[in-house]
Length: 193
Image (cartoon, rainbow, N blue to C red):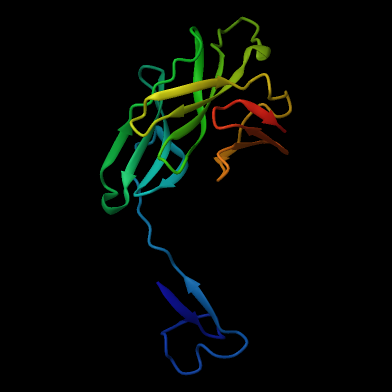
């Protein structure tokens, strides 16, 4: 709801005498919101608005089994109470853990996801940080994987995590990591930094 703010800082009803004129007049916007319910072990992140849906990544941990799951879900704007799971598969490297990073869509509804692949931690053994890598993947609107590119060799130790990525009108993918922007063509092939 929008409302005028009077000079004494209190919200005034629109049209109220003296409340919307003068140097101290302003507007306060209070957006409507929807509280998405999750259990205490489920966390949502990386939200993207695409056409008629809100997409987001989820991570949950089962304390009883010690297992964690990651995935993507969506909700239609007109019925936020109905949650859909997206069946996105990423094979990655056998014997490695894979976690999702950022995701985004192109104008045709294709989804792009960054994935991180790293060795499974084994207690008591030295962890090999040099064996981590990052993938950039593309899925069609039915969530079938089109391609996966290992972009780990392009990234550096200081810039090894993609914080945000987008696709430009030119069809190129722009991915930020630290203070660096990496540019990839529409097939996920590195072009420049």
